[in-house]
Amino acid sequence: MGPKFFMQKPTPTEARTRRGNRIYRNPFTLHGETRYSDDFLLAVKKSGERHRLNLGSDLEKAKKLADQISSFLTVPSHSFADLFEHPDFQQLKKPRSYQRRLRSHYLAEPNDHAGAKHAPLIGEVIRRYEANAVHLSKTSVVDATNSLRHLAAAISNLPLVQRNATKQQRDQWRKKTDAVPLGALTLSSLEEYRTASIRKAGDDQLERGRRITTLNSYFRCARSVFSERMMAFYGDFDLPDPLPLRKIRPMREPSRRYVSKIDVAEIMTKAKKRFWLRELTAEDQIDLPPTNRSDADLIREDKARFVILLLTIACGLRPKEMSRLTWEQVDFQRRQIHVGVTSYDTPKARSSECSIDVTPTVMAYLEEFRPYSIFPPFVVPAPRLGSKEPAKPGQIFFRQLYQWLRRQGIESQNPLYIFRKEAGSMIYDQTDSYDLAADFLRNDPRIAREHYVGRRKRLEVEVPGLSI
Image (tube, rainbow, N blue to C red):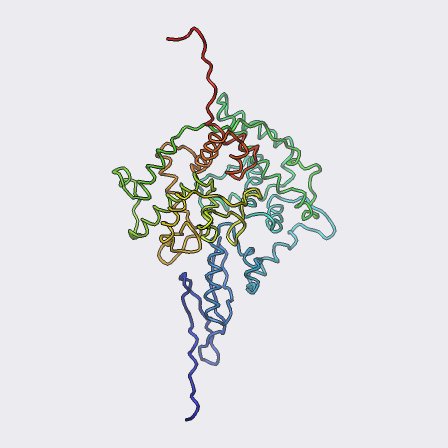
């Protein structure tokens, strides 16, 4: 019997991964014949930046790598720079367009002269800061640059950007503020701006306190652009000496002592009926936004909202920690949730990294919710909009949950932080210990003492002779 010959299965020109990502081989023409590259490509876009990433010639490995890249880039704080520097993606080749853009960050500014220093513009400092602040999260970098631009606009009498401004309006505002010389931020101009801003509050002490808190935040974030670590990258800049932003001292802020004004038990009972059991009232039916999603999607989203509330009040998790929480961090056997550095997120502080003990009741809800989370690896599933996944997983859950909480009387920009404060206050009320409240919230004890205590029963003095 002669040898058998098997025809090799042709490699497909494109394929879909388990998460629905499309990978393909690039077509090209040779001698009038259409051919395809050996390696598979993945086209990705984030924050206006688009690249085609080479995944190699192995189909199954390319599919797996494409899903890993997609999951990594869905994290709001992750960028292409983080992707290429991450140890899990060292095999990726950096696209030529990315390499050209990376080199452009370190090119000399137009007014640079060899061996000479020059007075920089706000935009020059910001570009140098963004290129070298690799040790910071994207959120920290954005807060610092926006604060510096805000101060530059304020002292230059430029209109401040509005919260509902379009992308084009924001880009125009950045161009104007980037053209302001850094030397314009003198100590006198900054103090005059702060004084004028506080004076606008008049006799309203609440508004005065809010303005002081906001201004302290602006100065603190903008000052981080000129931290000791970053000063090494400004050697060719003729910076003011001393730097005005480093001479500004914060003003005394109002007390942040939290006083409970809500009934957590009542709100959680309503939330269970509304989101977990989906017993919609007439008011809930009216407030439902029009949608083309299926009933299964709506059920999954509502249950996810209840899980978010439950993890906030019972475990003290922050919104960002919940949106990036993976099932691998949930230990059902030991009844713990492990908060630490993952491929998708870095905790807020070193004290935030720990294992949180979870009650059997909360674990039972998570166990029941697990089949609904069909988009691994995250506990809070990212809703799909057709074949497109949102840039910020879980965003729709938080936005609509905030709207519902405000209707329950929690008037706050971020109502979930009210629930964290309630959780800290409840722990203190039960244990009479600041340290245990801080340990539960994974905060510094000084912060717990200042912010999260307001439920403790005070002693009451019975004045004799006043009985009715």
